[in-house]
Amino acid sequence: MPITFTLSYEGGLARRRQIDFYDAAYALIGFQRSLAITTHFVINGTVITQAPSLKGAQILALPPEEGSWRLTAAIVLATVFAAPQNSVIGHLLTSAYDFVLSEALGFHIDFNKTLGQQYEEVRKTRIPLDRQSENRFDSVIEKCQTAIRDMHRPIVASETAEAASLLAQVDREQTPLTPKLDRDSYEYMIFTVEDNYPTEVIGLISS
Image (cartoon, rainbow, N blue to C red):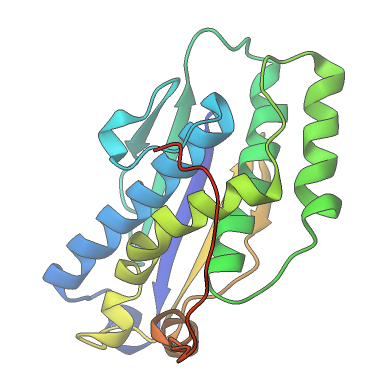
């Protein structure tokens, strides 16, 4: 079975199975983009800036569920991964996407207790995936910021929905992801603090 992630809007007009078309289009692009960037990083260990650059997997849209405003994305891994490995990679990907969303929305998760344990499971199965550090995930979170903000559009622009939730499924095991998208999570993302004091940073830039 494929690894699936479901984005579901609720409240407002979404309660009556309606949602603003323009905002929905941007939200779905943001959903796909955030999944593509995270999936590519988990599988390949590199951070992409464009969703079409995803390698090692394909993200497919499944038919919308009748009677609700939900969209499910199925992640199909490349044939280089054996079928029994899908479960292990699926759980790692679920933890990774949950971590990216949570950190972007201000819900801080213990990296070592979540992704650290998942990478240990991958190591035991000898699946050729490199363990990534929390610092490297910061780059993924940064690249997903705009996409996650776009997922808020039906809530904060047209206000045709009040909130959105995400659900992952691997081998019929469903996992609700930590953060719920709402106006508060959007306000957190757009809030910035400016420092009047200059800071000097010395280091090497790779790209």
